[in-house]
Length: 380
Image (tube, rainbow, N blue to C red; front, side):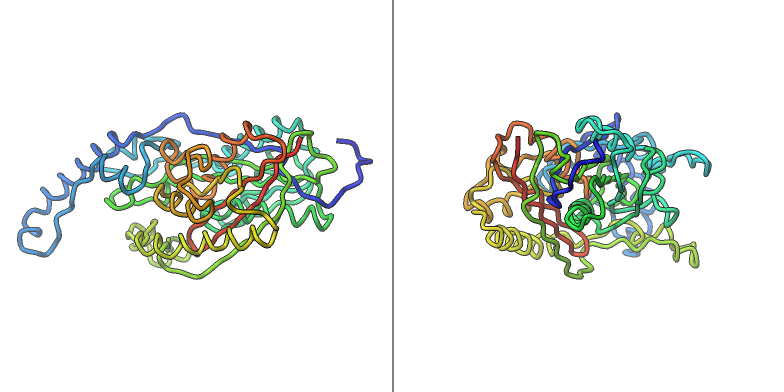
């Protein structure tokens, strides 16, 4: 990058990066582990179940999981403990304070991928935003650790808007570009979601997977020839308890509750489906109209990868017809729900084939409720 570039104040996406863990868990493996846990629990509590003090746990099945979510497998940082019926939780070795933390490590890998794709050096970047659902610690900020590991001079901070964190981060980065406060911003989303999942809950034990993504948002004046113009962004939040995780450092005051189910991911899935689908579809259509974009003319939708049924209905309401895999690609089947990273993975893996002038939409939605839209046009 040359220092004499005159900023345009117009934000673009120059590149994206992806880190995928080597290990994955198939639905078959997951069901075998879960059903063995159910069998043991029911056996050990047979008397209480017979007396009505406890309810017997119900087994899961591959068919149930795929019908409920569309997920067939998910990547995880480590699978052995997750599949052990006696543990069913991640077991990641704690690192010393002078070692790179695991969340920063995978974030750095995704960021380096994005930088390489844009032919950038860390010194070209002005800021790092770590936008993800669950931070490894309250402070120092994960973003500052990632900044340090990459060798970036500038500023960095964390932000959490659950599954919408990445799109909220993109708008924040775009606003810095528009205001002239930065010319190049990395939005990094390291998501080790296996840590907040209740692997013993039949209705949700199959949902999440681990991954990390990065989005390089830059001023158009310095962008590579092939890039994505950010045509407009919109964010929305509406408070709801239907997706919730109560774990936090204040729980240390009552350590006996830390393993309680509500300290992990819980949701009212049917309520979420009913309330979020119309909210997100309306938001997309209204923002498209504000930008004078025909929503039915969008070439591709990169939607949040949480539930195949939700994406199908949202895409249908936006496009006016049942979306094809080409129009609304899915990575949910092999990655699972990766929270804020899901729509970015879909974009990262399914965008190179579009032609200059094609328009598309990155959209995420989740707990909060929160939702974010990023309308794009391919340039170059």
